[in-house]
Image (cartoon, rainbow, N blue to C red):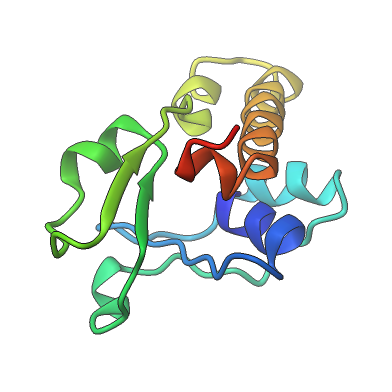
Length: 127
């Protein structure tokens, strides 16, 4: 969701990439709730961090605790910043009703959008 929001809202300022250490299919609930806001992520693919080897990043931003704990080493010139968001799949797994599960995704979707709207100022301390 963060990569999609960044490309949708700040694509003229920021080149965003999203990756992890355990790629998997894009979550159908995430596709659904992003679509509700007019952002189609149905064609997105989960990517492994190794697929970006050789790219020089200015920032590596982790958005969940698991990512912060397992984020690989990056050269010293790369600024690593962490902003914590709840994990919608984990929260949704505790719900019995689909609409309640989707509400976790919607809340986090909106929190991530708010975060992205503050970029790049949030990274430089200008907010």
